[in-house]
Image 1: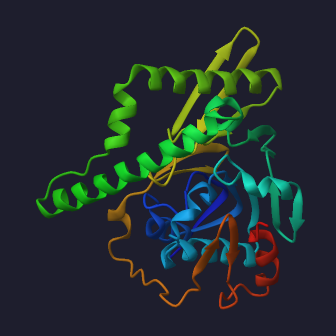
Image 2 (image 1 turned 180 degrees about the horizontal axis):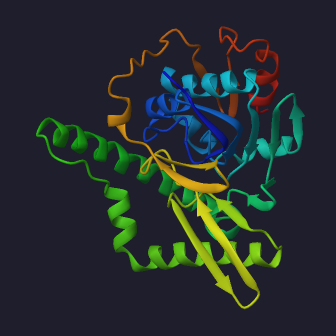
Length: 294
């Protein structure tokens, strides 16, 4: 497969370890690109949901592909989100071309891009509300599983797929209003800080729009997610664009997944990823201490 060169690639909200994650599509996409910089903008590994003992080979393949890019010279920034907040204790860890952090500022062609996950604006990820949010996450998982079953049936009948969660969010005025407030708040803060672009994740709503206030203007972008929208942000030729995954673009590509990948074991709230068999060109020694949460 011929790879597309990309200056900067931003992915967020993969939610590895959940039933809704489109891991095979993520791997297919990552194999098709050659980014100079890869920004993983939060909620990459869904540590909130690890108790389910669910982390199939395709999800491990995503991690393997990320480290394959790293080994080939891609600079990788991992920005923590609320679902992988347990990694925040390692903030500002740097090893080779890998950096774990809570925000990134990139200067691209003379313009500054501010990238962070965005959960700081969400009160439901803080304090006692976080418990309710986690419970809601289980309900969301059930909705995704039901949606997948129905979409399988729709595909057999030759009909178009549908997204229950997207329909619910788009039909509830409160949710629509909250998304608008989220975007406006991020944009206004970026204007105050004199950034040209601000990029968030978190709300699973791919977006690109210019926000203007009396103090200036900024381009707000959101990388979306790989549960419902299957989107990313790509920077090339002095421009940010939203990428939408389309299976038709890869229908002639042979995607064989390594079924012998190591399994993930979960003991209480600890995560121990056994990746000794991954061919990461010497990066295995780095991955294990990073991914062990004790």
